[in-house]
Length: 251
Image 1 (cartoon, rainbow, N blue to C red):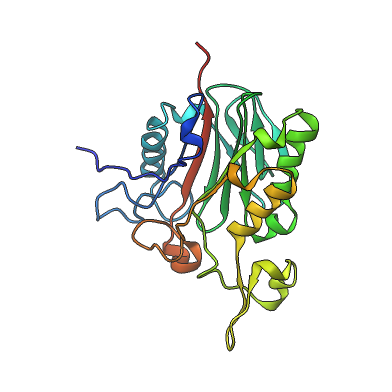
Image 2 (tube, rainbow, N blue to C red):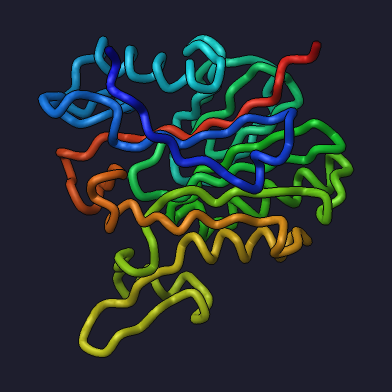
């Protein structure tokens, strides 16, 4: 019997029947697996094991691996509209109207942001590390939906997924200087901490999305060590998680 695969879900997006979304965790394999439930290649895991894990995760969204759209993430601000699954070079945000294509973000501390416009049946997926956040990748993606696809920002919904929280996300002064002080937590005698999830939610609000349309996952990838992968915590022993959003196939 397969080991159960716990998932992070969005209660906000779950209210919509035309969209499915889930984020994997580090749970889903037997304890002897080399890197827990790892969905990233090139990390010391066997490729066949990673491929099998991706297929198991995809199946929970009624997808196959061939239905997923992956990004070769570069911590930039490149946004692509796509119509089919595949691997997209030098990209950190994807947009589609195509049902059955799973827009996928791969993370191990960075922030996955999932967007859904019900009226337009349009979705987007964003990878936002501190570099991408400094480039306003989330704000730019939301603005593109509003400006180029005529999405009403008050009818746009977002999930900010499990990622490094302000409790643990320590940065240097040079990185902290890139962000508004309201999102930098300074503690006497220690390095500043960055509220990356809160800042990405704020970028969505600046694009006109009401705060009530934004759900922020309270799980911290660095703190919740039994549930989530974290590169900052585990370095080369860290796996990767996937966050996928997909429109339902039209009937």
